[in-house]
Amino acid sequence: MSQTISITAIASISPLGNDSKTIWGNYLSDAPFFSKRHLDNQETWVAPLDATSEQMVAELQESDIKYKSLDKSVLYAMAASRQAVADAGWDSDSVFGINIGSSRGATELFEKHYKEYLDNGKCQTLASPTTTLGNISSWVGHDLQCTGPEISHSITCSTALHALLNGVAWLRAGMVDKFLIGGSEAPLTDFTIAQMRALKIYSHSEEVYPNQALNFDKKLNSMILGEGAAVCCLEIGKKESALAFIEGIGYATEILEHNISISAEATCFQKSMKMALENTNLAAVDAIVMHAPGTKAGDLTEYKAIQKIFGENLPLLTTNKWKIGHTFGASGMLSVELAILMMQHNQFIGVPFAKAQQQIKSIKKVLVNAVGFGGNAVSVLLSV
Image 1 (cartoon, rainbow, N blue to C red):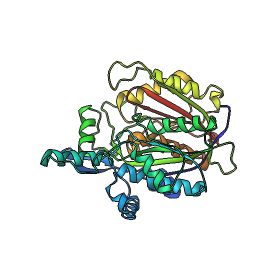
Image 2 (tube, rainbow, N blue to C red):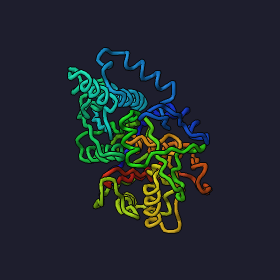
Image 3 (cartoon, rainbow, N blue to C red):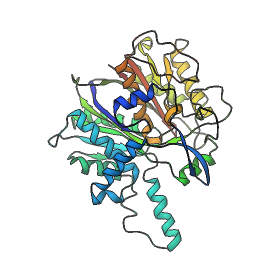
Image 4 (cartoon, helix red, strand yellow):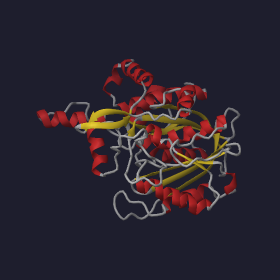
């Protein structure tokens, strides 16, 4: 990359909590953060926000009458963004862009408004403006009194890392010198769960670890949905206050056989990783935070792609979806958060039921992967 991009703050709201100390403490635990809710007419594994984060969101929603009609996906993004901008030291005079996306958008509100329409044949006035995808970045911008560009997008499960790519592009083009990027998702609804079950990828396990992400020998799909948001502050140049630096970016798509297909050796991931690593000695990559959603094909094909790139000398491999589920459009940035925490604490966070891996050197470079329906893969190399 021609110019250094600094990550000067990162913040999230998820099942793990909403402050870095709590989040790291929860990563040190071998416990998953799943519970059961009655969704899609049956008891269903999900990963909801922790109680403290739910209270934070409730207080945010009550703080302004305009916020009472907003979807959770918008409120989650607002909560995380407030923290990130404060941590970065951006004030009301800072001019920065915003690009926060979502895979599903205002799912809960859309289902609510559509049900009301089916029941009584009438649509509420705010049904349309509160369910558009553009809601997320525009309301975050309003809340932060931002005067820069505001962009929302959906590129399924690689949404947050595509936001990172876009932020890097704006910064390198000299159009702004600060960008707030990330993803937000609130998918714990009846119809969203039903869609995942229709794809036959949702977990119905009663094991201690119902999501078996990184178990490459599993016989059943085990994806579980989680909710949350994660955002980070990007700045052009090598800042002394940086948490990490973006050292390489890669992206690729592949020709699809069907709507959710991915090739046997994840060609898209091979291309995106190769691009992100083009100026890097492969031996210098200490760990990879995989996308690994807990599906048979998704986990295994990504692993094969990593083998193709790295050969027999694989970095340490991990994922957080065995712990907090798949947060769709927010998942890539939550993976970036895990990568930064591992580098900050110089401690690898593995998967308790996966093949044991031993950390034998400092963690200074971590590759983060994400991919979504449509074969849209993104790989980002981070360093400290």
